[in-house]
Length: 121
Ligand SMILES: [Zn+2]
Image (cartoon, rainbow, N blue to C red; front, side, top):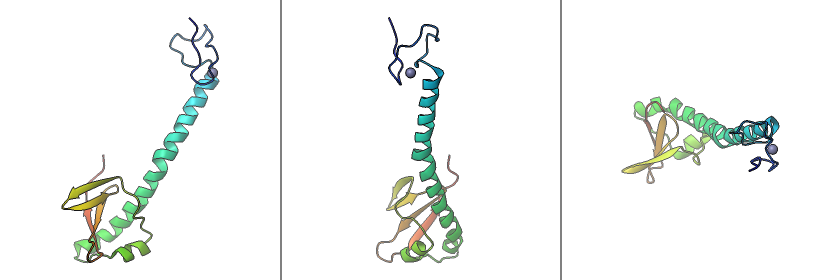
């Protein structure tokens, strides 16, 4: 029974390993390359953005500790992206978690409360 390359559908030569999924190293390499490109776009870029926003929260966290909460508008002026989070936690309010920090917006006062979630795994 002949086996077909998962990438180009050509027959896999009998000289290739029995476990080979591709007809040649070129096909195997191309698949690997595509996969790492996808991983890069899907994970690395959003992570950079999460980290950038997490850094903004880390800079204003001392203000929160000192008892001053920034407003939605003030945080926006710092370049904060409210559209990104890695997960949401529901503890009375909805907390959006970035990397090490999470935040929640008080719908009445428009103030941002921040909490330190600890080190990300
Ligand atoms: Zn192939």
